[in-house]
Image 1 (cartoon, rainbow, N blue to C red):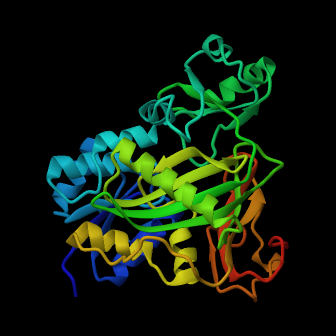
Image 2: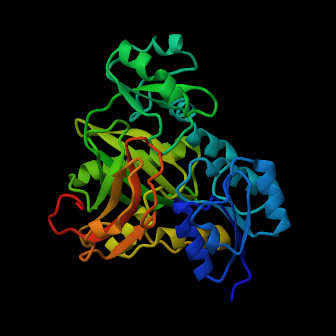
Length: 378
């Protein structure tokens, strides 16, 4: 039995993967969250109600339980704290807190890439409506600079659209600022990559299918392998590595969300973490590579378990979210998952679906081999 002690920031659905992994390894797992109702809390050895953005609180918690590492998966909010606390305490961490901050703030990320960076888009930022109305490169996407999970994202096709949606978008920003970017109209993909000492150890492109009827690119499902031409896929992986080099991601997992502009990859966002869609589980199902295990092994030992650099074969499969409208009462009997290889619910029967996007919410997910069906239907 290992004596490792791990502090996981957050205890919600995204963190359950990490908590379960660490428990299976025999680690003592401490967790924290701003709330005491997260679904992952009963799985923890120790829990304290501390906001994951409270660096001093997290450092104090880590000292109290003498942890060997601090980590989080699937959360933009956690990454700056993970890295800063690691720096303060001298614990292993993948990137600098400066780099984590750049990736977390959409405007700092765009600025760090620079106007002439191939794969960037034009943008403005605004703290007041008058500033936002300066945007004239329609169509555009308006979103909070420091939120996550498609919260507060709106397509704007005119100044009137900016007026109508500005306050709603700004309400999701912690620092009180929105970004308006040129809209890219093309297929959406994701790159899940792993980097060690600045070198690509693993890279894989997946097709990202979103809800057309809702703004902000709300995810419906991921598909592996991508149907795109291999040259386009390689260009997307190359873009991911160029971004990583520019912003300072030299170690650990990273997740790049990309749209194709007439076949040319353009970055939407880049995160120095495992994504929030449990893609590590779909990738493991697809080709046997376990990015969650690789992340913790690398973090705790410095060793690499990945040969890389690019995964090129596997069995076609999909990860599809069980999606319901905000406020829906969960009734699992309405779904038939008899053909699924893996099912994970975020809710129990009788629970009411909480508001995250305000449109359609993730209630769980299903992994299965592709069988020609278009979507999960009740």
